[in-house]
Image (cartoon, rainbow, N blue to C red):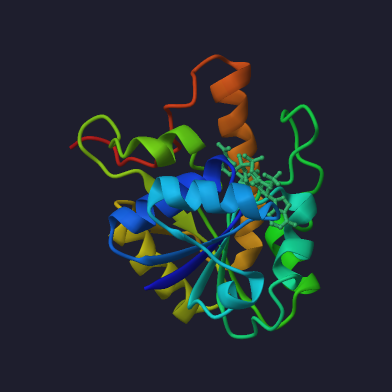
Length: 209
Ligand SMILES: NC(=O)c1ccc[n+]([C@@H]2O[C@H](COP(=O)([O-])OP(=O)(O)OC[C@H]3O[C@@H](n4cnc5c(N)ncnc54)[C@H](OP(=O)(O)O)[C@@H]3O)[C@@H](O)[C@H]2O)c1
């Protein structure tokens, strides 16, 4: 699949690396061209212009929530593209969310960039987990919770998620991004605030027997 990744930080780099490893054609976009070229080279992707990034089938949005709308609109016409939104609307100390309950980062981005089909996903996956390739104890793949109002877009994102080693959990409509972003907030609290570290991931398991 042809995929563009916007953002050359922890998540953008990790995502691009996993995609390349799985055989996808990956274009990386950053606001600093030299950094994008350096990161792309390191992971085996290609640094591309915003205009070229817009041509991909799937666009992975790996920038801070506050920059998400600017980063997407900079690509130009992306109507009809599947955008996987990794963002969490975090407070400056990472210990809270700036919006929630009645909306979410995903819903706000979808409203601000009409025509794109947003899938909320991977926002509960720590960058260290994305980078590690490791499974959950007991041999299960790390879950990717995917929420979208488009079944088609969710299927495309799900295919991509499985191809890079994630277990897909259908998280319902985009409105459920309100829960996924809160879940990510709790994950960050457990990882940093409660000291569990960042090699943990949320997972729902059935009872034994
Ligand atoms: N880190 C995690 O464990 C984790 C887990 C789940 C979800 N997330 C979410 O994923 C997103 C990225 O997190 P991160 O940890 O990768 O952050 P990061 O390391 O700070 O990287 C953010 C990247 O976004 C780029 N950027 C900012 N504005 C841009 C714009 N307008 N156009 C293009 N690129 C732009 C930055 O460019 P510069 O290099 O020029 O600053 C940087 O490369 C955030 O929304 C975060 O909440 C993070």
